[in-house]
Picture 1 (cartoon, rainbow, N blue to C red):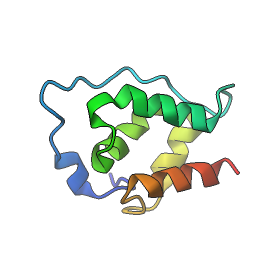
Picture 2: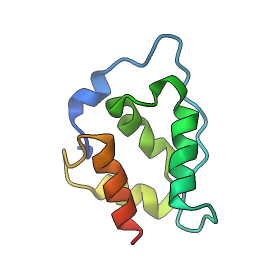
Picture 3: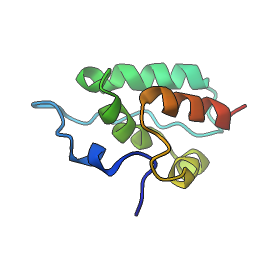
Picture 4: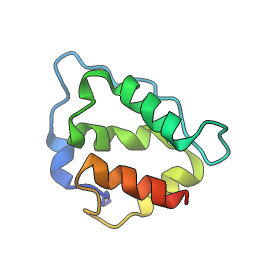
Length: 94
């Protein structure tokens, strides 16, 4: 199965003793804004925040329902940087 980010991102080791957080899920029916969800996601990422490849790899764990389907339908290698992902995410909702 392809992913919208480079396959090499799955090979990057998580930081020493990093535990993947139980992210607050985002769906289109949510009352929280996109900006709030992304901000909360980055805070929950902790030490992985600021490392594009790790943020991008963890991002699908934030999604549910149609937002997860949207992410899964993005073209292969269409997301290279965190800025790419943020732009695509914002475009999806506008």
